[in-house]
Amino acid sequence: MSSAVMPAPEVAKQKNTGKALVQVKGLKKHFPITSGLIIQRQVGAVKAVDGVDFNVYEGETLGLVGESGCGKSTTGRTVLQLYKPTEGSVVFEGKELTTMGADDLRKTRRRMQMIFQDPYASLNPRMTVGNIVSEPLKIHNVMPNKNEMQEYVESLLERVGLNPYFINRYPHEFSGGQRQRIGIARALALRPSFIVADEPISALDVSIQAQVVNLLEDLQQEFGLTYLFIAHDLSMVRHICSRVAVMYLGRIVEMGPVDEVYDNPLHPYTQSLLSAVPVPDPMLEKKRQRIILTGDVPSPARPPVGCNFNTRCPVAIAGICYQEPDPPLVEMSPGHFVACHRAI
Picture (spheres, rainbow, N blue to C red):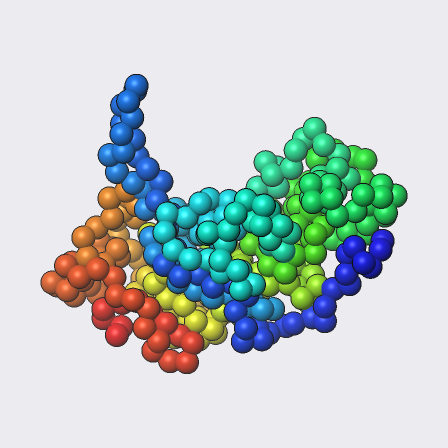
């Protein structure tokens, strides 16, 4: 492989450098609800992402957590411009993505990739492993020499823990964990600086999840990667992430260093999530107080008036929480932000 084509990875960055690689401001993604058979008109909108702000710093792993349907995956896809945002700004490596032309965006996408949630659906069953991993190289015309490309693909397979002789096999010949490793190899092919990992372990057996997470950590150190790690497994997020952002109904309600948020949660939704995480010590588990939320998550097409969480909040304040919208994220301690009337 020519070093002029695919430069060697940088020195590992285990902690964030303080320099924002990705800056997201006021990001919204609303999906229209239409009515009519012949002449369709918009009668509403599903507010999947409804105004989120966060930075992802070079070399860090930012965890994005919340219940199913809260907008985590939509946020990740919108950051990568797989969905065109309704409003807001996404700056990647100093460049505004939302106003970027198609050609420039295509070139920029070499530096940002995605690991999809379902390893069974994200791989083309008609393509061999070699073609799947090399497809980004062909699309961007990075490595036209076929022999170099094959050697590079084999080295990627070996790096993610697969036998390079598997290069001519098809996805149906692999287990779920092996398929996810193929997806990781594909994401690494263009040597990106930023990867959105969309619940990369949720479809895998518990015994395989730790192996994949350890692989992601090793690759981060080796290639100097920055991750947006989307998950609902809070114990795994604490293991792999340096910071965490908690989403509820399309908005971020709390964000901060992972240990600070887990040890001192300020938003009642975060407190209820963490109270459900099992503790291995049976004595501590027996003393813990569970916070069980009542009711269902409201529809993002018809969010409640006032705070989005007021229909399930056990400590909602009469009046303000049912009339005033969610407050902006307020910094309560260094790097620890919360959006809650009672907390601030």
